[in-house]
Image (tube, rainbow, N blue to C red):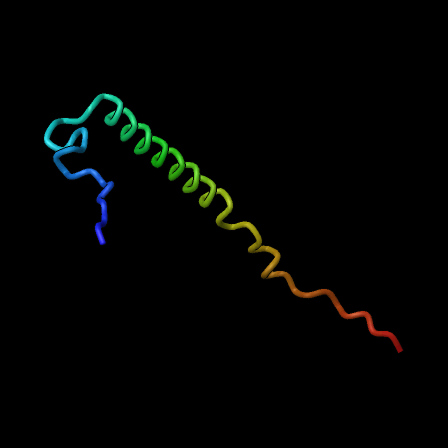
Amino acid sequence: MRTENFEPSMSQIDDYEGPGSEETRRGVRWTIISGLVIGVIYALARVYFWDMGVNEITQHPATDIRRY
């Protein structure tokens, strides 16, 4: 049984031995920038919503209405 290897070897990859193409560098930059922006938005939302609901927890429950 013969198995064919369709995966490229390390030497066949575009930027294995070089600095990489401009397209690759641009893609890496956008990935890092978008990750940082999403992280900042998440951190700001967490700080803004951190104390939400604290008043609801510390309030005493209303008196029960009982039916007789």
